[in-house]
Image 1 (cartoon, rainbow, N blue to C red):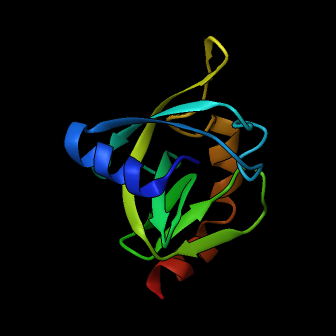
Image 2 (image 1 turned 180 degrees about the vertical axis):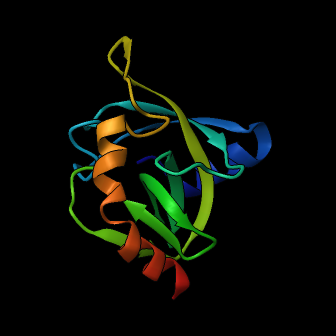
Length: 128
């Protein structure tokens, strides 16, 4: 991802910021070189992609819950993470080349149904 300090500053000033994806944790949806339009965070919805500042890193994962630490999930990984950090933004749109990517604002019905099978462990994590 781009320089987190610059992203945070730009979001604070304008409410929007474009960043370039690096890494593979959100595959198959997001790939290196994809461009994300971030919008300053309000209250994220379950399954929405969010950008969280953790130390000097900006990560984009799916929001599952919490009020800090956040429960986040990378599409390409099996575990659910408890992440300490500042929730900066929600992903409004993603592009690969000149086309918008589907499914960046929430999970598909199949994805949500699969995750609902894990709802009890998620509730336990939220109570910690």
